[in-house]
Image (tube, rainbow over all chains, first blue to last red; front, side, top):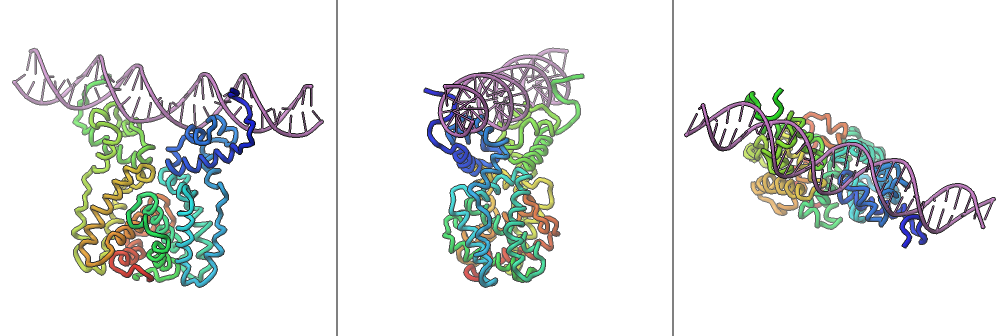
Length: 196
Length: 196
DNA sequence: TGTTGAGTTCAACGCTAGTTGAATAGCTGA
DNA sequence: TCAGCTATTCAACTAGCGTTGAACTCAACA
């Protein structure tokens, strides 16, 4: 019964910690998740977390980026008729959100609400990594306003579908969600912003 | 230097506690706010909180309802041309949100993200107290879907304007916000929900 | 005037949290 | 084989939390 010391099996403890952290941060938010709980989820002593990560916040940031989930989907969103950009954007975003049990963006959304630093991270991700590229592909004015409007509808959709769990929006299939939300996003992207 | 015992001035400590609680819950969310911090904000010993309220959750609920902020604005939203219902709804909602430094709904929004019980409270408030009455005043189908769509855009607007502080949406005046958001809400309320 | 009850503080309990330093066990390369 | 690095655990520290019970002081009413 060896207690301390290195394990004999070739387990990847760092990855186990990141997976457990993802789950825990997603379920409970940044403040609600505990190092002890994450360590328990990975079957490991809490102190071990500090062997791999500087502190709780570093673990959070690392968990957000694991596995690498960059905007590599952007090209296929941008390709095609700009008149159907809203359809492709909403479809891609919702399918990414639906695809995993603990989407990093939803984790960040949960934590952004009570932590201004994470709100900054989310805002910068949304604007810099997603919406600016999309809008730069269009010939429109008022890009920043349009970007924030699209963000407002997408964030609201995430809140309604995953956090508040509003009955019809939560159970709708991806195609139905796209059908009702995409026209709004399309107007924010390319439509007139005055009276509609 | 009297330490314990009743105060001589006619101060309303209960109201002071509720005001401090509002501010603290708004700033930090339910879990992040502390009884000790709220008591300090009211210039009072933490134990005094338990003289007036059963526990932290009771204080939270009491702070949400203080001062009474029911949907007494509904009639003036419902009155008038249904074609401009979106304008009146968005205008009223944003002006309520902007009017106070710690709107109860925004507090609830902040806390709902990490606490399912508060998510239920917020959902029920939005649907039962605001959106069902509005939709019952219209002759439309798919009321529940329309309600959740309106909720998604309003919640997203709140997130963008007050939590994420997306630059243009945060600084826009109420009239400008209404101008860009109301058409979306109007379509969700009365427009076609298929391809737009 | 005396008594009661409401308002108020003090001190503490039990719990959980993030974090750290020392000790131990196994792997790797000389 | 052995030295040293890395992985791992143990035990503890400090700080903060919600909450409680007892004590004290004043105001109001009989």
